[in-house]
Image (cartoon, rainbow, N blue to C red; front, side, top):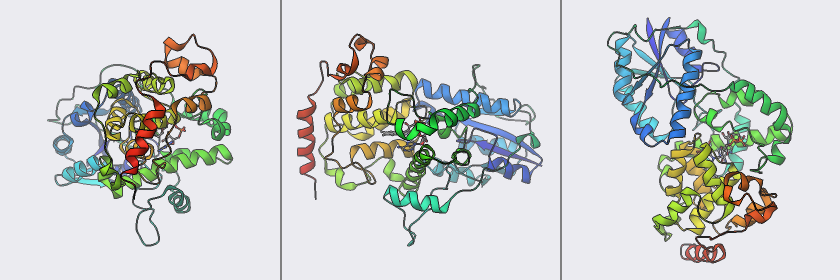
Length: 427
Ligand code: FAD
């Protein structure tokens, strides 16, 4: 008998409950990834390239047996299952709004067997004693720790007989992946981080100039590694504790989104629906391209375009700037981030934005407005981060580099403007 393992955000073969479930059900399985045009057209070049690299690595792990098909999964997945005579399709659960609707539609046409999720604790599992969801991070994180998670799932993908792509009669023709490189050795990267950077992680994680974080967000986003695998390997100490808390944020935001899917596109705190916003496209473009005249903001926005990644501290600063200095809707910025971030993840991104905008779950209070110059002087004290990404400022030594140059707005003035607008909606 045959089955299908449909990979989505679980592009790995180790610690993989869905592969385990599939191998228990059938002797042969087809490994499928569907390139969904809806998701691809919203993704920038770096993001798509990163996905391709993940898929090439997965294909290698599967002995070259990954079948990649472009099309609407609701259509493709049942057809592929029929082509190999499979009565079921195995997946890791997708708990985001788009994936839930898509999976429900697929499940109407073929049996969909869900095992595991991309999170340490599946969204919806950690609730208050009265069964309602947490709205504040700290008590969630405590309950999440108390709940705990399973040890890594012992998975041996080599025990599965992966069906050769050309065996299925009538498979939709796959374009295949463009040739190129796969991922670096992710386990070796993790070990290097754990041994060299984790001990100082708590002290260094806020400094964009220091490279003190794991840069594992994209691997986690695409499921190249499961958070449970990392949690099991963290050990003790301040660094481990701080890192565990960051993974708790990831689970928290997924939980919030699961309970309130509409929070992906509208204010979690509906009071802010009444806030007056601007719609200046020119200022928005200046922000997107890193031309605001505020060096830390410009460095962050250019890092995003150059690397498809931005340091967390700088994400907070540029997001605050868009919302409180330019008075633009947070969802404009969130969409730009989702297009370009290789780790772009709806739950973490939209709620990270809502946190910075003051509209989210236990968000930064609206009236606490980040000063982009002071943030630069504090978290990039020698100016090295700015000089790396804003080449025209390379001649300016030390923290003098954080002084605004031809700023598109005056921060002190816009701060007052933001507070005045907030006054009109305050309870
Ligand atoms: P590390 O410091 O090494 O953290 C380890 C892991 O913990 C990360 O890989 C990530 O999975 C998780 N994590 C860390 N901080 C957060 C957080 N605040 N919220 C949720 N998870 C966290 N993270 C994304 O993965 N995808 C996004 O699309 C995303 N968008 C964001 C947008 C804004 C406006 C803000 C303020 C934050 C956003 N974050 C997002 C959270 C955070 O910035 C990144 O996870 C982090 O910078 C990734 O770098 P790292 O892997 O080196 O992090």
